[in-house]
Length: 233
Image (cartoon, rainbow, N blue to C red; front, top):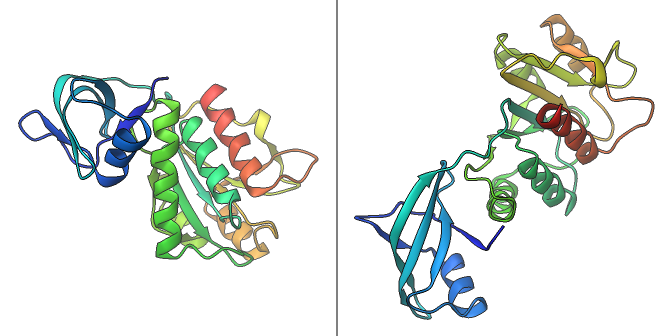
């Protein structure tokens, strides 16, 4: 996949203005020149071929040569509610979820959670989404939702889709659950696991309690296992 650039702003009359980060990369790292053509995307499904018309230290602009709706999304829409791990593990989590086609990632607030999804953390997650999307070729950004408690997510997820809560020693195995759904929601707890109250509340609301197998997985590994099952299964 060639270098791709995210368009923070929609083209105006066919003219593209790259934001500061992308302009800096084009001008200083790639040493782009007027007349070069680059690939850009808007995060909403459109991919553009852009001919650069202005390259300077302060700004990079271009003219749209072509625009095409190119869909590289999985057939199923997956929302993951995840109790975020600490530090750089969050970047890895976001990268792999983007690559595997997760539609929406919601930071989950749980009884045993360790990383608090404050606004600065959410901004970092959104930055990671853009970086991973540029690399993997998706044209739609994975959404980073506002933090939700387990109680809110289990109460609001639509009953018209699959609803899974990941928990050891559950009756349902991930390899056995049905993928015959268009929309799926899966909740992944912190390293300390969901509390008994959180599990019981989900069960009372008719969520499937799903076991990932005999080994205890880290949060980000569990997310990849779910995303791969849905995307590739």
